[in-house]
Structures are given as structure tokens and as C-alpha cells.
Image: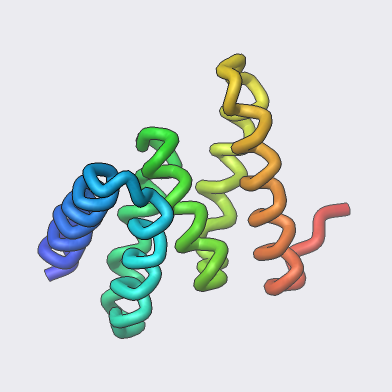
Length: 121
């Protein structure tokens, strides 16, 4: 069942993104994804969370943006490790947008750490 939920989420995400890109409303895609994620029950969220975590690892900048937004908005503390790995990659990335994305990722990591009491010395 979990693979089915993940596949449906990936398909829905791609469709939402496509529609909003065509409408030149990329912020609308994020807002719609918030609504779709909010409708999931806890068991579905646990499974679906694998999709944005994978986007942090291998997704486009746009996919990473949406994944980061969902993790941040819904306080998905399980996203700490994928976010930390992304931060390391961004520190080594020489693309023009990497420093700006890194700031967002670090801000989200800090917020999630604060919510869990996961402080590093």
C-alpha cells in the first residue's frame, strides 16, 4: 500500500506543479500542496514523507523548494537528516542559487532542531 500512496503523491505533485507553472503561479503550487498534505492522515503522511525526502536528495530546485516548504510548514522532524545532507551538498555547489537555498535549508534545520530539542554542542 505504501508504494501506491507514494506513487499517487508523486503523480499529484507533478500535476499540481505542471498546472501552476503553465498558469505562471508557482506559489500557488506550494499552497495547493500544503492543502493536499494537510488532508493526509498520520499513516499516509508517514509514507508520503519519503517523497519530499527523495526530492531533497535528487529533485530539481523547484522540487526541493516544495519539499522544504512542506517539511517546514508541517514541522516534519524526520526531515532533519535529509536536510542536513542537502545543506552539505549546497555548501559544495557553485551554482548561483545555492547560497540562497542553503540559507533556507539552514533556517529550516534550526527550526526543526529547536522543536525537538536536538541541539548540537
